Length: 67
Image 1 (tube, one colour):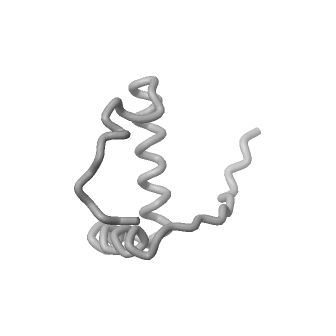
Image 2 (image 1 turned 135 degrees about the vertical axis):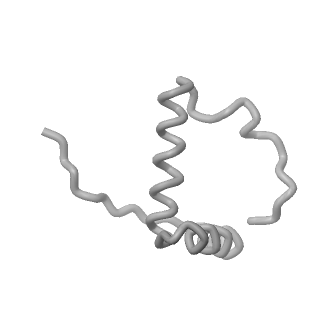
């Protein structure tokens, strides 16, 4: 039988990353926790679909400053 209770995990992110997630969450009418859970769920779905953990371009540099 699966345990469907939500699990709590500590998560530390930079202030800039937090601000970006908060803005995105607000745009999507979600809480920050809800947005992080949504994003992680989408990553898991993509992994199951492609059989990969991340895309081949994952390590490519992005022109953003979130650290």
